[in-house]
Length: 330
Image 1 (spheres, rainbow, N blue to C red):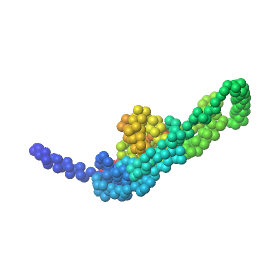
Image 2 (cartoon, helix red, strand yellow):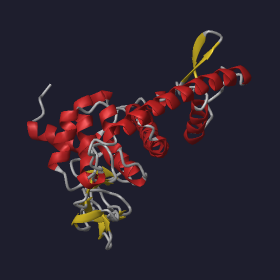
Image 3 (cartoon, helix red, strand yellow):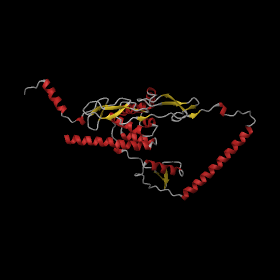
Image 4 (cartoon, rainbow, N blue to C red):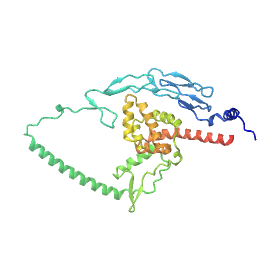
């Protein structure tokens, strides 16, 4: 058999690739998969998506964010995010712009404790009264009286607790599968009034779980780079402010967290997206939707978890539809 020339083979291969359906092709960098199936270019920071691109690989129609709103990264969000105002005990470090949120810091007489998001007044030496030594006997007497009151309070507490346990039976068969996260928290908090161990209750000599663990099995699917923007949008639409703790619980090292916070210290939105991106690079196929949801629930960010589950369901439906389309084409 005569061998075909190389250039004819290349032409035939190119013609075959051109016949593949658009949705089976992988979108390149700075592109996203549009609803039409085309790979469209992302809108730049400071703009939002007005209309998706009409053809494969073309530019989307993007509009500038209005005053008071921003997008910090390349995106295909259909709206800009509202800039956060400074609190009464904060001063503005950098103003809100179309591509960055407003950055605030505590006023000189205030400080922000590590891990918290609100400023607190600093203690001064004027707040501590000076002592000349004449009040020492009074202080000792007060301390002894305080200890006696504490002991009495503890005795009353244990007596009341013992009586309450006798009067209030606790059921071990609480069905929590169809209870929402907010109602589940109320049940846990109510139980805490009767039992310090919030999640466990002793019944018939055995320990049973009060709140059944959430079933994340249907979300046990690896996250792709194309999914990061959808996850980022779901997080931004929620009121949660402790997303960095979610990334720590999901397995991102403290070194990576601190490096990203340092590199993007004036842009919280960019920090959150870069942490997601680094987490995907580090964890690989272990970076699943389930891992994120579990980390959110462990941080007690149940509202964020519920919001993200709705967005994740849309993503997984899209994957299922693409697989069905591929089966039909095959």
